[in-house]
Length: 336
Image 1 (cartoon, rainbow, N blue to C red):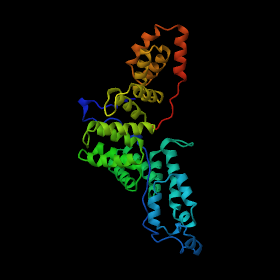
Image 2: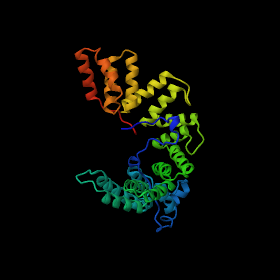
Image 3: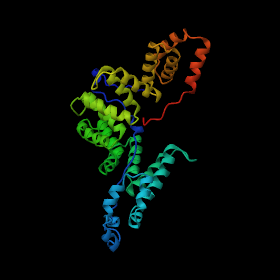
Image 4: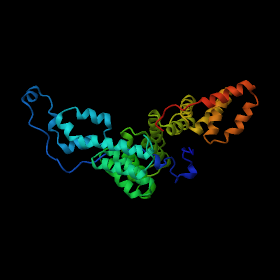
């Protein structure tokens, strides 16, 4: 995997880091029918006690609020009152369609991968107002090369407040609209504020490179750290480099080592190479071999020479032990 994520000053025009086929999905749209307020007038008991009458919330407002909900949140909202249960039925149906579509998208649950069937389910879910289905429909359109259709669905989801839709829309603008970088920054910033770690990382890259916004290393480092703390591996690696070179953050060897190891333990090949070299310099030969071997398996072939030099200094049993550890290694969970 190509994991070159640190902006090179000689490559300021290049935007690195996001296979759009792996973008994440979510969000929804209201239906035009059933615009009236729910249910009956507030009961005398609720008005006397001052308790809110949830059933009085207008249908279109409720649908906009609930459009980005996942199934657990949607189920919880449906239990608030009968009016909400009835009003949110289309979104619950959308969740079933979304699950059905994902089975065909990924070839799971005993079915073969079929993008057309997956897209059909996502479109039906989008019609019912789910922004999660809108984003998944956009992802398939993007994969099929129909980028304008994909952007249209991302726009619908983004306008309803879905962070994943906002992130995908921002990245799409960076890809296909050369004059749309400022608009891309707007959507990436909104998604970042909403806690979307991939958007935070992409926003940091734009700030680091000065792409669509004035170059700002301090802000870039802040968003790298935010995404890193949210579990985004590439952000962990870049945060480590910020601490290493003192770019946007005060130089700190301890913090640099911490974030480099976290990225390495989550499968980042360059981080595994760097961490292996650091362990070698500290005399931790067997651990160094493990991380260098992992880096090689991730495509960092430059680690081969260093690993072979270290192996010559180890006993046969230690070499075998190191390779066994590499074979049994599993990456820690991350939000990638």
